[in-house]
Amino acid sequence: MFRAPALAFAAALLASATVAEAAPPKALLFMQRFGGEWIGTGQLLIGPQIGTQFHCALNGNPSSTQMTLGMSGKCWMGSLSVPVLARIHYDEPTDRFYGSFMDGAAGNGVDIMGAQTETGVSLRLTQGILQGGMLAEPVGDMQMRVLLSFRDRANDRDIPVVSMGFTRKEASSMGLPNFDLSQFENARSSRLATIE
Image (cartoon, rainbow, N blue to C red; front, top):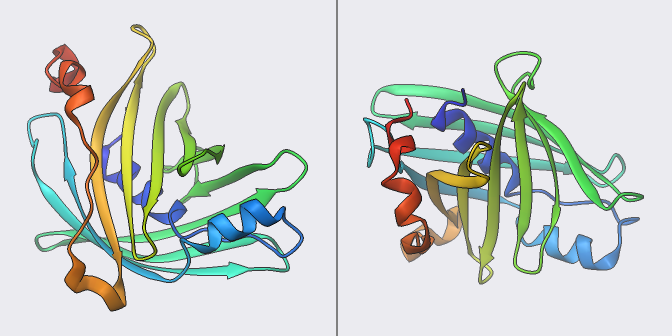
């Protein structure tokens, strides 16, 4: 089963992606909005530790020649600190993003696949038969929000597990944006809210 922090870290890495000059202009301009250094705070939305917060500081290093992004940094909760190391790439023929967080699904991480939407980017996170999702949306030029979910295949729905808000490091005084989670209240109060 996915661990909520692992999903959060995977989402964070995707939020700074840029693509090469050869990519379609729409994708290039969009992904450039996520470039640079970001700091953020997230919180767990389900489980026995619901409401617990953690923080992340991330630095993206895109390569315009290889159409890849390396992301490094850390996320922490109290005195516990976890490194973030990920790599994704943009595939122009399929207009999709592929990659892995940490050592991918073959290890203790997740595999990543997704595409741009009208408002952001939507990705599927996979670890064996388990699936999760990530939505990342820019908020103006200086902020972004990220929502991670667990795929409840039995009931054909996504259940949010982590909500995160990020701001550019140089604009940290702006505060952090959040998702409106009211549409997910029924899912959060369901029996799956006891996921550990």
